[in-house]
Length: 323
Image 1 (cartoon, rainbow, N blue to C red):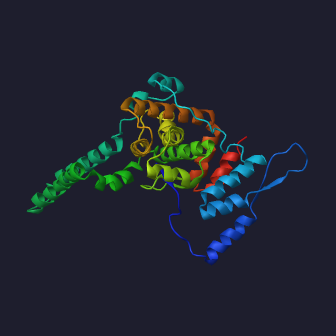
Image 2 (tube, rainbow, N blue to C red):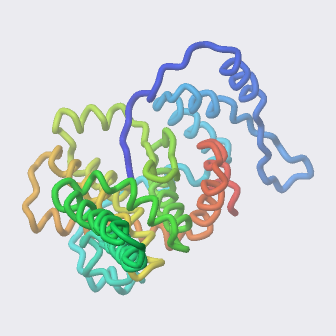
């Protein structure tokens, strides 16, 4: 899931813990490769401080300076995007599996959850029917009502079941890798396009990557997002879907991303027709998938860092250390 945020989530007081963190970041240095015998050190404390303060302009300026001295070589290395007419065949040729069903929300987790609930309660009900006396009547009745309640809630307010379904989905063997692959794609593509990252999470039910860009946030809220900025945000929004499509036969986490893209489209000028919106989605998936495929090692390095709960700064270092 992709979030665009312009301000800190919380306001932190000036405590001793915060002071310690800032003191630590002031001494943060990294080495860069050099042809000479002496390996120069690059001071990234400004970047660390800007990330600590969640200052979008300062983060961008720090990364721009680090690019000039040869450290942040991947930052904003793909600044130009240009929308064009895109076909499903191009997505398939690139390696996207089942390109025609990318926009169809997956029901894998929902179906598996409901099947398990109905199956388990039904089986337990059969066993409980062997209990003596009234217990053999009431217990199966109560167990059977669980399935009915779950089905009723799923029909009326499906959102109430998302926490349970999300917890159940974590039992799938590909769950953690799939989430990391999805969110790392948002992070990497945003970084390559020059959009700073605020934070991220791979926690169950809280999977997201937050962008920092006050200017874009103002354009979105005012409904004045132009075609150029819409294209950039569309590529980032579709990056997670593209990463899953390159790896798996079925894409699971596309619903929230498609909703985010639709929000951007609704806030853009000029208004896009239905065919233009469909083409934008296809092109954004193609562009994002191309970036991910061409930067596979960066994506894998970032995935590993995120799965190890690395900080945003450490994630950036994971990207930049790949030669």
